[in-house]
Image (cartoon, rainbow, N blue to C red; front, side, top):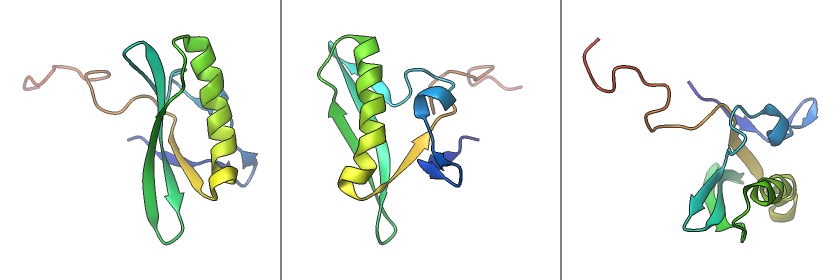
Length: 102
């Protein structure tokens, strides 16, 4: 089961690019541009889903911009990231049988 990991740990900041199974974590292509999506935890047990365009069609540039956003966003906005780094959720990846009885 996927675990949502806070961006800070007792050992210091987590580097999402180094710990992710999927190098394209938190990215998706919408038309020709790459977008980022992640969740932040706010004071008072609130959370918010953040999504916006990275303004590039180049995957390598999108990864670099994503890494910069994930590093800088929490401090700039006064929140804590909640990152899923163990692969994509949902879809057909990792499923066997595709709905057939086992």
